[in-house]
Image (cartoon, rainbow, N blue to C red; front, side):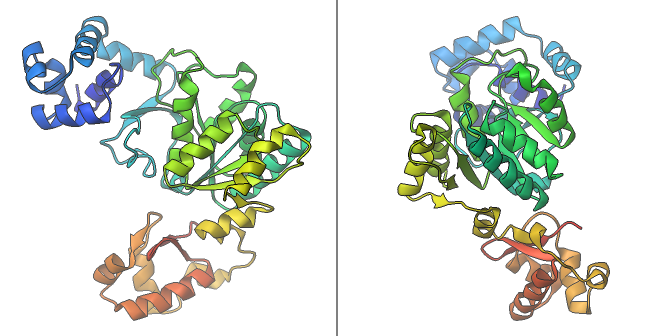
Length: 363
């Protein structure tokens, strides 16, 4: 049994998270040795009484192969923090889930994601705004993350699917428990153009205490969080607050001051969230507007104009590369790289993803 399967085992043990896993890995060298360690060795490694008792109990009561069979039967797979497929934006979080269950696909493009959240009791205005903005985000090549709830979440997912884009739905239940059940068909569509994601074990019911944990994953998977229609005391506002604590950008759509469902979003704007009136307001914040380029010269898309462009494009991929690494890989001076990259951006062949980092734009 591979070491990744012992990540699954430890993920089922209450009160063993990233910090304790790091200690166990350091002490025992790998998680298989930690899983099989004696009680005295675990105590010597510094495992506290409660997590120690939890581990001993889980080891007695579960069979890892049976857990793997459960995951396979519901058409899911899992990814651990130790693996490259684990979402890049989520990994640095101190409280990131050690393991994620997935139904669908995760791809590098999903690192270019915006979360969209809001009230379950959405007005026609809120639903229309969420649907329209997320349709355009999908067309721009931006993955939209939400929570599969009724109201704004549902409109956000449907909008990006309509736009032909990708969407991720983060569940507050086991990956096999679609909640709310009204969105079962929507969940099936999401799996075709993205993924359902959960940190909770197979069979976990959608209990209220799970949703605050779910919300930190929604924001953690995203470059920023868009709030559409949310009361002041709501899960969407809590998600925005978590996003702010994580260093994510917060966006909000203004609404009528007479509607209590807009008090939270209007207050976010008052407190410094970026006001959104159109999709461009979000895309420009992260230089994500490549999908909105209206015209590209076909010949330039087929072949670089000169050897310098070709040398740079050969070193670029869909993942960001720093200009210093491009200089080393291509052998070109920084000044030449900088000017040529600007031309490639204008042509719609490359884009910036952060300070001095560049990647290809998918055709």
